Amino acid sequence: MTTGEESENKNLAYYRQRFAALKVNKTKKRGRSKHQPILLLSIIDLIAQGVIRENQINVSDDLEKTFEKYWDVLGPDSQECGLHYPFWHLESRGFWHNTLKSGFNGAKPKSTKTLRKAVEYASLDGELFNILQEPNSRAELIDTLVAAWFSSNRDDVGDILQVNQDLIKLAEKEVEISANRPNFDIEPTFYLRKSPVRNAIFRKAVVKAYDYRCALCRLKVMRSLTQKIVDGSHIKPFSQFNDDQVDNGISLCKNHHWAFDQGWFAIDDNYRIIVANDLKEESPNARCMKDFHSETILLPTAKQYRPRLESLEWHRLNVFKA
Ligand SMILES: [Zn+2]
Figure (tube, protein in one colour):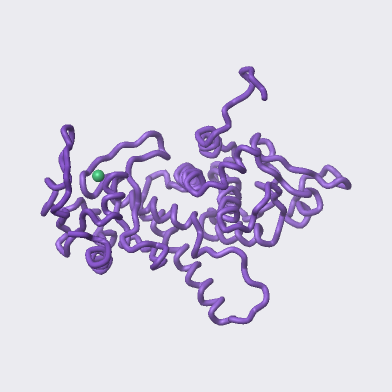
């Protein structure tokens, strides 16, 4: 164990900070290069889906395809897709370590093909790889990357909604392809429809539509770009319905998200709050939940982002306990 000042505490907060501050190429014409964050998202996704199981990241077809899928949706048109750029350059960020092939000639790879000839595999800091085994930590690091790298300057809700929509379309295409080819031998190992990155984009779109406020109590607390008190919650659960449309979402603070999922309150067809009548509450410093009964929730200004009545009804019938 190292003990001096040279040892930093390589915990989740440390990597969150590193991911938000990746050093990348930037030009006036093309903007900040998005290759490194897209590669990191791809890797976290492959870990989540059990495709990358060991701390040895190969330049595999799975990785290349995943990177390309995300590039399609998240990569700027002005930049060229290419896995070799970030795979090579992440080395100097401190947490990414390339193991080179013994016969490597020293020339910087100019394509994925030459990258394969140069690099045996990459590994992450052991601490980081361990952190990435845990779903909540993965979600936090994905949220960090999405917040730091895929927000438009104008912080326009439309941009992130478009990304959400593009991901839904891509996922639908995947389902179509596998339905049309029931017997094909090469099963894709990566499915966008199960992707935690897709969920992160959904959450971001939802909380943006509500200006980062809780739809029930209006609370808004943020610390930096990446930490906020509200969650973009699914009204009908994603695991059951695979529905990432923004109108199947609602922005709620942590307390009220939990209470909504427990069925302690619901929302009627006029967007009025219905609170279960058997809650025993004491809240000396803030309003009690039951005080919100029959008030209207906070609604996004744009009508198309408001909660879908059909989703709210499903929640009333299946989750709400009056
Ligand atoms: Zn709240």
